[in-house]
Image (cartoon, rainbow, N blue to C red; front, side, top):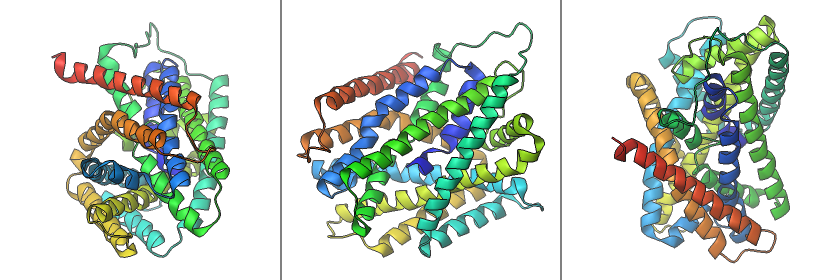
Length: 397
């Protein structure tokens, strides 16, 4: 989950939040991670308690829920994979010694992802992702500590813009939609956990411990990236790149200017593996849950590996098609995916809450009174922002 989460939302959205608004959005980043926590945790509780995935739980709630989930998840899978694929390709081109087109770089990245997944070396990548995440966290902490000692010199008469105005709501919506990740990632976590329990012994305590470490780690990393943007870009007068690809190159230059020029290519490689890890993770996870939803709609007893592999190929080729033929439309598509993630978040959160609260789970996994009230407060928070966005986008005009 951590590998899937730490991508555009952290490297781009969190850093931009600090760069544009300074420290003002720290509270919002903490709150959105806090209030989404029970609904991501639901994937662990439900799967460990029932042996079923969240997708199977949606199927039990009713066929319309499953159809809606399949439709929304398929859209998200293709657009998100295309964005991560282009992001990875751009970072790969940053440090290779010769020039290649974006198309060629994207094909190299995608082919590598599929080879790793189809040859069963995902466990090796899982270990590599943990190492890369650790190095990324350490180097970012070093950069932030150096930045605290040498903060940016603000331009004369600089006035920090307020994020609490209606005009800033669009940026807040995009940031919240993918912070720490789209809510359907809880279904991916659930699917991975079920697969893990079939291969090795997993206890409720160990599953929740692993989840908490990953979730809390991603939340802290979001604040660290925000700090980097606040310390090195806020009030500097530097014009921020609008695209995630352009901003990622700008971010690498930030690391180099604080840690030292020697670190430029090291950071580029680490950032690449971070985004590459997200790319391969979402291809694998989305393919699992989409093929599982199709299997349940067709009332088949078990998911077939062939079906999952076919779904991987369809998602991958569709995403590559966007990069090759509609690259100019990728940014609007990505904004659409982020807004879609924001709009669907409260509804997926409600579904996860219903599943966990209405299902008889073992005591270590059952929803206690405190978590129940916390979940209700979280739903009020998420639906409140959803209604505010609807008012701003369509009713205010």
